[in-house]
Image 1 (cartoon, rainbow, N blue to C red):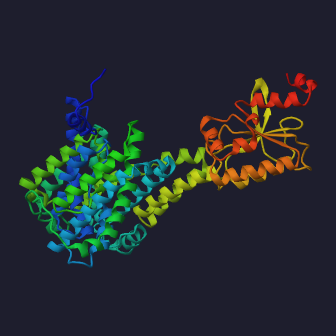
Image 2 (cartoon, rainbow, N blue to C red):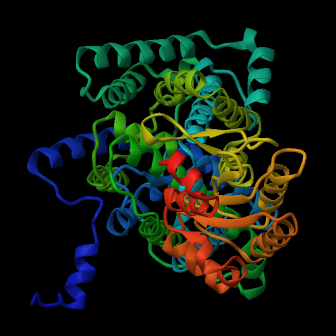
Length: 571
């Protein structure tokens, strides 16, 4: 008999699930991917601090301990948990009036929000809310990611052109760019074009070439040598160095209570966006995803973000795409990124000041283009025009209103599709087909399986919302003007559940049919449905003798009651 593992050993084996197993070749591959992610993510994280309103160095802190925490406790091998524009915007909107941006008080408020967010994410894990990811259909995921690609691409156009853009909405950003089109800085535009062309050329030479890393290094070297800032090319500027000091500044109970709403909004955003992103890459690479385990990783990442003096972190679609495009296949890439960031904080913040913003924008622009899944949209349109409309709507909402609204819409639309299929299930009358098979015809008045017998199929669980459809269609099938029906057999193969309201509807149907001289029977009743029938006393109302395990048994029973000639003709 196998012995039970000690609790400490079982707990240890559950850690670093997103990293194991790791070979020497995998370690080298993921380390290179992590270096490339750091090369692009470091300046990008610095940019997020402008949205969040925190000091520039806090952007680097989001790429340190939070990455390691998620790699330790999460399950997704691809999801990058770091600074994100959506949660940074929610944070800024919630605390901007409570302290001056960039002040010590402001940082303390941001860290408190991160800690409260970690609590809400842990609570979501205890309530097992990771299942919310199951309600994000592939259709809306394609639309969501495409919308993110357009939004991110539009968002960096200003940096690539050297045009000032202050709006956060994509439509307003385009309007600003068009309004200032004559103010485009040609040196900035030329450097952006050169960066895009160089990365594409390097990728064409070798798909695994660290093109972004080479572009960043070359741009910093050229900027330092030729003084790009003096020629009108905007650069990052000085960045403070040193590792973060762990701790949390207490802001008081009253202030903490006022931050609960902001933290709850961030938590909802994190659950939805991280689940959507992790699900996309898990399905793409045929990997198992444990959403509830990811909630623990996200909670841990935000907890250490708070303790290291930075703001809320989230699963980022853009940064996750960076890891995948760089060849990373496990969270070891993110741990590698954290190691690079630690080295940068200790020794290399000075060269970082020469990095031009337009080079960063060009790299992000190429990633955004890869997020736009036109091929997936085309396949959806060819196979399911209705679902194509849902995907396009989701993408449009992301571009026009924002990522958070797009994610909420994606979840709502996915849920509505499920409700719609259950609310209006496939129904019909079963008739004998060729080779002893069954065919389904519309459940219209006059439709019968054979003279006097109707086998009616209801294609979903029977509950309060669709019970009226069940009652109406059954009533129409047995109305005197439609056909002389003696038996109505419900094919219950797809009915997995009957709730209280629906059970009362079935009882009314039984009474109505009995008044018309029609017998009600059920066939293909599974064990779980039989438990519902017993609990709601439907077995007694219908009669156990009128519940059949198979359709042909119900049909044979009807034939026997109609006389030997009918039974012989059926045989």
